[in-house]
Image 1 (cartoon, rainbow, N blue to C red):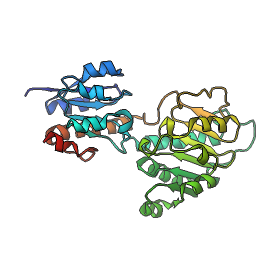
Image 2: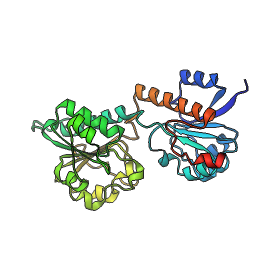
Image 3: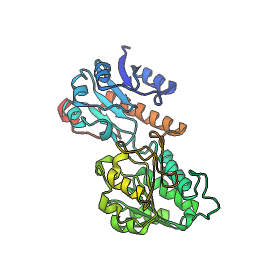
Length: 315
């Protein structure tokens, strides 16, 4: 059986088990982690498949150099952030799949940990004997009720938080009833909740929360962002934090501002995105990406195909 080469970026995804499964289907893994656009243009040439596990951007120039490429699989949900040339790929007849929900539990767990760390003073090593308000006493608003938001809602209710609300453009009555949460319009959610946690995709807007919407949040409210760094208007966030009106905890810091002088009680962020990084989440996503790539190369179809219009071009 002749082998076809596939490109895998980053070393977190596609372990020995997945490499063996790919090999059984005639696919040989070629690794090239953390590539620049120039390196990616060279690396993509001659590859039939591509599992995007790094932080690189798939630009139109990259697509132009993908002379043999038939399928791209992104190891997460928000593929458009990393494949800005997804329309160009579709126009070239290249299938794209993602891995929605594969790391949902890990991200929800991380967001929950940020809430606890900030509300209980863990990040700033306590408040010198000042009593903290329990998370169970607070009203918590979830913005975006996809895989991550739903998982977080379940976690919060199991923890004993009575007042959990959500905003989503489409209501989900089955989740409201089954989990025990309420739906509110976005503005009402922002006004009412002590903690707002963001779980929208980048497609929802950049920024999603504007300066005017931040102004609706009550003084002292906590904003948790485990979605994407530019989900919130950056200058407005900086002003609210520096004034001491709001507090925030991010999975990764928004670029372009320096918040290092703020106390940990007001602002906390990981150095880079960490919410998705648990062993089980990485394994799950690797399995999903492997199966999707095999399906796309063998049949042209997959449960997680995001651009079915590519078929009209390829046929």
